[in-house]
Length: 158
Image (tube, one colour):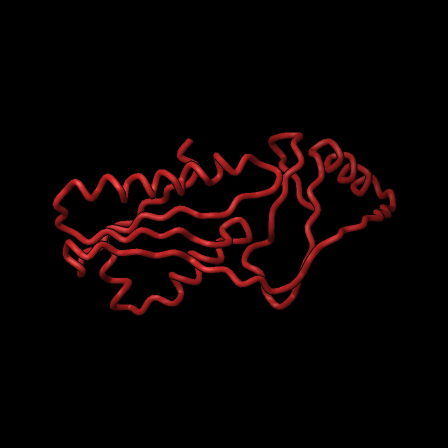
């Protein structure tokens, strides 16, 4: 059970990057959490019944990565945004605004002579635990990693 101690809003989330062991999470309100904690502290035995419907499986997805042909390829400025959203929120904000902002920067950059190469990345499966960006980062060689001088995250620009 997870809850936000600062707000009574029910939160959703994960316990981090998925592993071979699956642990379900259930968001509850601060009010319910405080009630359960008080009952537990008073020695009241707690019995909680819940039903969680979940899909556990493999879904193939891909990052989209493009690097300018101009600019110093040993000095890369990287910009990224995730290309997925959550069902509960307006995808136009999180992260449609970031993906379109990144595309707009790429389009506008064609009007300028650049000194450094610029890498644009649209990450897959951010909402599932940063899967796309983590995959990219973990699979970079040390040499390729050393060429990236700056990363700018274009998450929720509106």
